[in-house]
Structures are given as structure tokens and as C-alpha cells.
Length: 73
Image (cartoon, rainbow, N blue to C red; front, side, top):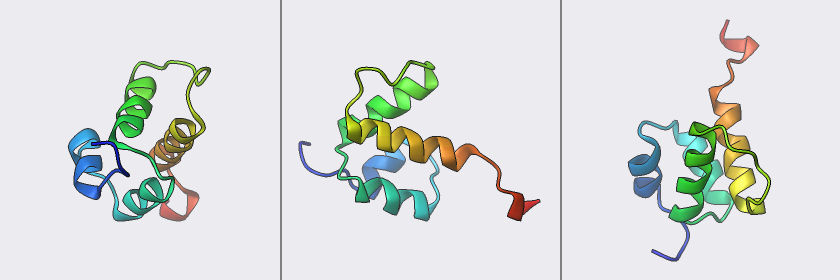
């Protein structure tokens, strides 16, 4: 698919994802390929160098979602 990623596609790529993260990822305008690339880069600890702005935005959202917040403690 060449258009903007859908929540179903995000879940297919990432597994369980919070609804807030789903909305934030779709707001980036990312495609399914962008989400897959961001996930792959993070899983492989690849550098952001060479990644598109959209892929970097998705990576930042995924990293932020992994960080525990002080409010939850």
C-alpha cells in the first residue's frame, strides 16, 4: 500500500500498540513501509542517518512510548 498507514497495519507491524501511539503515528503521514523501516531500525539499533524525516518521527514516537513516565511510578 502506498498511502498513509492504517491502525490495522501499525498493529500488524508492531503488535500491541497504545491507541495514543496509533494516532500519533498516523499523524506523521507515515506509510506502512515507513513504520516497518522505523521498527526495523530500532530493533537492529541502526543509526538514524539516512532515514527520512517521517521514519525518524515514527522512531522518536516508538522510543518515547518505551520510556516509563514518572507519573506511572
